[in-house]
Length: 508
Image (cartoon, rainbow, N blue to C red):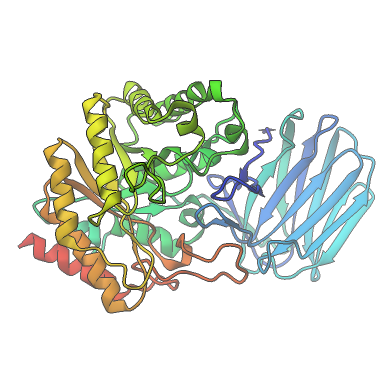
C-alpha cells in the first residue's frame, strides 16, 4: 500500500488553530484481540519521510469540528528515530511519548507488542517500552497510517498480527444495522403516513463502524442521512490538490446499504475551511470555490439526492445597512460579494442537474430581521435565475426559553412555497431544559413540517447525546450535551415518544 500524507487538520470556527486529524482506516478490517498480541509492519521509507502507523483501541470521535482523542497509540520510524506515543483517552495530550535513536534502513520491519503489562516497540536491536494503561482492553484494534505531507510517499509492504494463544481475529467493517426495523421506528411510522416524509439525522462515520448501538439506531430509525462533518471543506479537501472522500464514501455507502437518501452538508461555508483555502489570493478564490464544488458534487453524482450548497450566508449579527443581518463576511463573500452564492449553485447544478440544491440558515424560524433578510436574499436569487430548490431551517434551540412557534414557522414555509421553493427542517436539536419541553418542541416542529406539503424532510442534528455536536469542546472527560432524542446511554428520551405520536397522528 502506498501511503500519501494528507496533512489533515481541524481548524476552529474562527479559522485559527490546527488540531491534527490523522486518518483512521474506517473501511478496513478491525482486529479483535484477546490477551497479549503483536503487530509487525514492514515499511519502505524514502529519505526524508516518517512512516506512521496508528493502532486505535477506541476510534477518535469528531464532535462538530473537534477531535476527541480516545485510547490509541502511534508507531513512527524515520531515518534516525523510533517513537511510541500513547493516548489513554483522558487528555488531548499523550500519556507517554518515548523516542529512541536508530539508524533505519530504507526498508525496515517495526514490531509493536502488548506483553506482560507493557507496550513495546522494536526495530532491529532498538526497543522502547511504556506501561500499558489499558489501551486495548475493549478487545478491538483499528488501524490508521500517515505520512509527512510533501515528502515522498512511503510503502506499507506487510502487516501481520499474531498472538501466542491465538487470540487475534479479523472482523470486517459492518455496513448495515439490524435486519428488521422495530414496528415503532420513526422511519417506519413516517413511511406509513400519506406524506412518507423522510426522517433524517446527521451522522458521523466513526461511530457508525465502532458503536453497534449507534449503528442500529441510525439504520432502523432514519430514512435520510446528513453528512455531519465528512464533506465540509476542511475534511474533504485538506490540500490544494488533495481530496479525501474516504469518510464521505463510507456514509454514502452506509445510506445505500440501508435504503436511505443522502443530504450532503456542505459545499460552501464561511467556516470549516482548511488553512490553505483561507490563504488563497483574492483573485483565485472564484476558481478555487467552483473547482471544489464541481469536484465534490461530481464525485457523488447520482448517489447524493440533495446538497447544502451554501451554508449560513447571513451574518450572525444585525450589522446590515437596514438594521438586520447582512451577508456574512468571509473569504468567498470578500472575493465575489453576493454573487458567490449564485456561482456556487450554478456550478453544483451544472455537474448534477438531478440533485436538489438548498441554502441552509439558522435563526429564520421566527419573525424578525433575520427572516426578513433571508427571504429578501432568496427573492433576489430567484430573480437572477439561480438554480435553488429550497431553504433549510436549521431549527437549533440552544437556550432555555428559546422556543419555535409552529404557526410562525408554518407561515415562513408557505411564503417560500409562493416563490416556488421547498423547505426542510435541516438541523433541529433542542436544549434539554426539561424532558417535557424538549419533547413538545421536537413534536411541534415535526407537526409543522408534516402539515406543509412543500416541507420535504425533517432532520435532527445527530442521534444521541453520546456523539452530539453540543458536547463541550476540549473536555476530558467528555461533557455531553442534552439536545438530542436519545441520551448518552442510547436510551430514548420523551422526545422520541412525542415524535412517534406525531407521526401516528399524521397517519390517521
